[in-house]
Length: 180
Image (cartoon, rainbow, N blue to C red; front, side, top):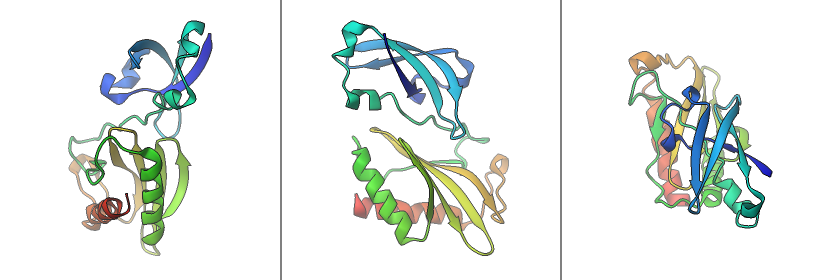
């Protein structure tokens, strides 16, 4: 058996944390994974056991399909905590999207805090405020997840945050449409 570590596909599990196992289908084959860990970025690690007969049919690029960020469940549906992106058409070339986002973030003075497969965490820092956001992406969608802020009066339960927060996301969306 070859063991691969991946991340739960959110579409298959509405609340991944409430399940001990999940099913992932790739290239017509079904794999059962057991949730074994959650990291600080909110990604769930799933141990997937693959029969030795299937090892030849799974390439390195196929294993990347198992690594997908899990969407945060917002305090209030539709609030600012999770904003879906729409500037880039699907299917998404994730490498190209990563490059376009990096250029857009640098152009507008954001600092990239971490860059992992499927998740780029960035921060806008000014003297009077700061804001940290996760940009999550995979082949079929991408979204922005609010992490934390200082002096932006964020209140997820009331869908309240500084008026410029959504504008900043909109500016990045325009840049992605241009750079992608």
